[in-house]
Each structure stands twice: as structure tokens, then as C-alpha cells.
Length: 436
Image 1 (cartoon, rainbow, N blue to C red):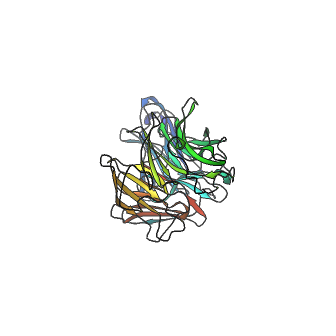
Image 2 (cartoon, rainbow, N blue to C red):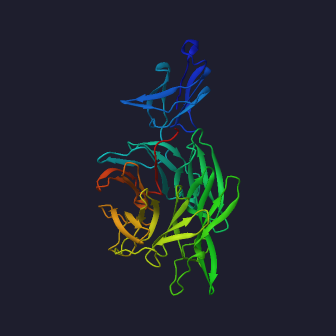
Image 3 (tube, rainbow, N blue to C red):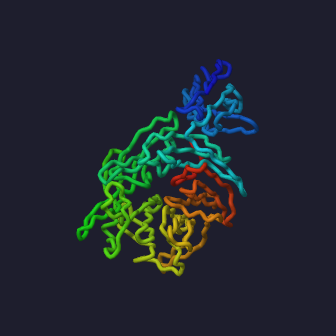
């Protein structure tokens, strides 16, 4: 990328040069300037018929503003404005997307995407993370730096808004899984290890992380992999918040698949695969495949407060398809749940879907309020997620299908992002923006 800089000069009040360079990657820009007196400034980027305005710089004499949103391989003009007056202008050219980013097809439906979507890319041989804007363009990316056994599963924005977080799973119960933290400012990365961490993670407190981990035990001469929730505080202290073994036990009349890759003799029993955190409740929610269930866990005490499941459930319902191999859950503001049902592989009557479930925690009943299945009949092989957006639309990741849909409450397609064949997607998250 060729960036430029101009001297704002004394008359403009910038004090020294206004410069636009790269923030650790050729497709992301950063503007820097200084002022003689503490003040703020606003930066705009114009290209084609678009103008992007970025949040004001912090009050001070040294300023940095991230310009995430200018597409790759694009000529743009970046201007600095203060008090309604344009002080400086720079012409720049962003670099091309890296070769590992798969080709993506964006289809607009009723409204298009809003905000920025963090998408883990899961191709053969390892993957990276991309951020996609409201027009389906990749505006930020972090390259694959891990082996095929460390596929990236989930990406999130940190609570401080300054980092993109993603996880890679542990090889075994005693090995370290990791949450990786990539600084938006310069693309530097640091790694936080959590023992046995796999599949999903959350950041319940700033700089503190929780993830799913394996809990191996032996019963009647058989070895089983259960799951627990492990937390790591910012100071590195690690603790087990909750274990499935304290509340459930495997049905010894059946066998469980050998999906614990570290040891094929271990039966992968509980296969908990989704972890969510509700800050207003200080509660975790997990999705469990062994009983087609969702569980609510009090974070402070580690108590299992209720279970919505096809067996031993605290709730009753009349829809026998309400929860089917759930992968991913969100507690909704009205007390309901949004669950992604992966469905059953060999059952022709089963399909992948996002389903909204109402819960009556007095009468202990549950019911289907809304659901959406892909009209083309996608049945995902792994993962899958759903997120209710502030607009009321729902973002659905069809993981192994390499497809990301936003749908309206009426079931209409707002927009779709499809990756090239061979590139699946992980748990995706919509955020308002990056670098604000």
C-alpha cells in the first residue's frame, strides 16, 4: 500500500504532519497527527460515491484514529476535520486482500447487512478471521497462523473494543487451549491459555475468559469425556466453574462416539459445544448434545438452575422437534432463548434451523415462537449458530455450508454471504463496528 502524509502547518492548527499509514495490514488504515493544544478531530474517508466518518479522536495533543472500513484495493481520500473546518487531506491506496481469504458472494435481500460481522474461516489446513461490512466486503482480516488441528471456531470483539478475539482448541484435556487477542491498532497478537479449552469461549469480565474444557472420568471400566466450564482471571488464576459430572451421568446402556481425538478409546459423552454469557443475569448457558439440551448455570455459585432438554427436563412442551442437537444459544431480552439446532445426520425428517423458544419459568413450559430453516435444505455437519440482532433480524451461520444469512422476523432474506466451495465458517458474531 502507498500511504501519504501532508504537513498541516501552523495555520491549520495541526501542529505537525497529518499522516495515513497501515495498521498492521495493507487493507487497514490508521490516521495520525498532533496538535499544539489538547483538542479532538474527526477523520473522513471518501471513495467512489461513499464517505465514511470515523469516531472523534480522544482529546489530547497526539491523535490516532483507525479507519477500518475502506475496502481493499481502493483509492481513497482521507481528510481531517476540526470544528467543522477541513485541515488536511491525503490520497491513499489500500492493498489487496491476502490470497488465503476465500472468494465470497454477497446477495442483498430486503435490507442488506448492518454493522460488521466477524467470520472465522474454516478451510482445510487451518483458517483465519475476517470482518465483513454491510456491503459484504472484507474490511479486516487476520491470517491463518495455526495448524489444521487448531481450526478457529469462534471470533468475538473484546469488551474494550480494541481487540478481535478468537480461539483454537486444545489437543487434549491437559493441554492448553487458547484465546488469541489481536490488537486492531497494529495487528499484534497475544495468547491466553486455558487448560483443555475447546469449541467456544466468552469474555464475561474485561480481560477474563471462560471456555469449555474436557473432564475425563472412568465408570465401570469405561472412560468418558464430559465437559466443564473453566475460567481464567486477568491475573492468570484458573478455576472450574461448573462440571457436567456434578449434575448428570452417562447412560451406560449405550455407547458414545469416539470423538475425543486425543484418545479413541474415550467415549465422547456430553459433547457440550456452545457457551454463552448473559451479563445481566451473571449466568452461563451451554448447549449439550447428549440430551439435546440447553442448561442455565449461575456463574457465582456454579449451580445448575434449570435444563431444557429432551430428557430430564425442567420444562415440558408438545413439539418433539423443539431441540435437536443444539449448537449455540442466546438468552433473549424477553427471557426466551434463540437456539441453533444442527439436527440429526441420518434422520430425513430432521433439518438444521434457528429456533426461538419461549420459556415460562413459573409454569415450566416451553414453546416454539419462531424458526427459520434454509429453503435449500442445508443440514450442517458441525457447529452452526444464530444471533438475534438489535434490529429484530437474526444472523444465522450455516457453518459447513459456508453460508451466512440475515433473515427478518417474517422469514425473508435480508442478505446472504456465501464462501467459495471448501471454505466453511465458524460461530459468527455481528458487532456495530470495529475501531470505534
